[in-house]
Image (cartoon, rainbow over all chains, first blue to last red; front, top):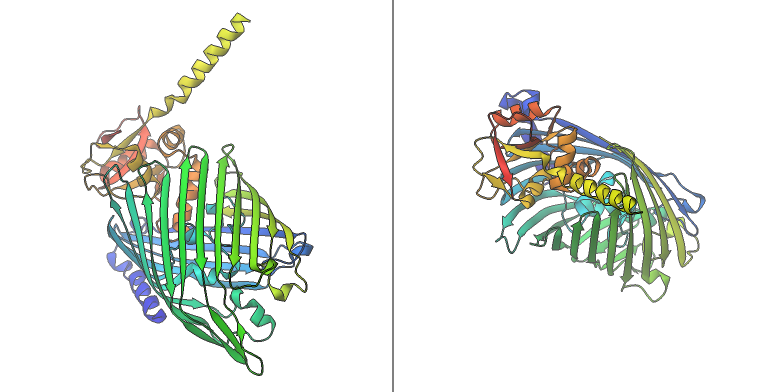
Length: 379
Length: 140
């Protein structure tokens, strides 16, 4: 399927010269951004970094090329270099898609496409697009970004105008194959114990999302549900398997004047087991229920400030700090101009259910403060 | 004291008038666009990538000014964002594969020219800029 889709996108790209249009008519655009981060924690190492010593191992650079050969057809490809602590450090195909929009009610994009679940998933790895250095980790865990961000397949989308007193309804329906590479963050502990995956973990996924743009100006309410079929991956000396699971989100966002308020509730239950030869079968299940509430305020033309409270409880864990994460965050972003920005953020974290990998920590402390700085440039 | 109060009142009045002076930008469209007016909500949706169709079914494509007072006034009055956040919003659509950045032109005359000669294009200029060959959409 992956090869078929790449072939289809290549065909769409190859058809561009056949239109015999000029480069200007094709509206070829090149955009990109780069961001460098710094992490420091008072206790525990976070996000695969040695953050308790201060770590600059948080780098990404993105290059995007797109073209609009006809008013209804758009083709684009995006490459990414990504480094987060011990993970990444490679250039990968972020996504590559052809998008055909019949009209406002129906369009389809196919190839390797962003998976549109939740409030922020389509933009969660696009650092210039939001004010936070880190989105709420209980829902948008940066260490498993490869698993959740994109899939090989397609997305159908559109907008229905309801009556003026009801508003507009945006829909997204997606389906295809999820491919989690062997170096993805979710395998960090297995790799550290020399039991990493032998090949990418693949499984079928599909789902849908609705965004209701209400008649109250600036208020959007939505929900999404993504389903993942059962799957298994061979490990060095064993295997890891998951039964089918769902990724459910309910969310809302309100923007008025200089304020933005948003909230989301999410559940990603994934029952699974790890079997290593000569070892007892271990439970790899997790059932986190997570939520956040956030607010941002545009203090000046260049300065935005905000705060969020995010929490998660993993009901598959026993009582104790491993069962929950509570993260109070205050943040600020300063845009020097339309190209360069700086973010500074402080997290007050209780619990260790997320983002603290066993491989990077010998003894986990129940509480830790995290300072995150990020500077970026985009064009 | 009374003079100071009057001066303060006058200054506040001037500031209030200045705050209302944002309607200096007008919205123009290719003559082939059927609509004669556009709601503020639709205008914001079109120029932030949230819609490509106007009420009545006209397909539209936005064109932008790179900078200038008409650009700033348009963003302030109808989009509610400054140039930095406005372009950041578009970049987020570009980097997530949902849209391409609208064409940005150097001058208001270039916008008029482009809108006049390209079907379905919608743009904005200062109200005093000559705009033959395009239609002006009233903003409701």
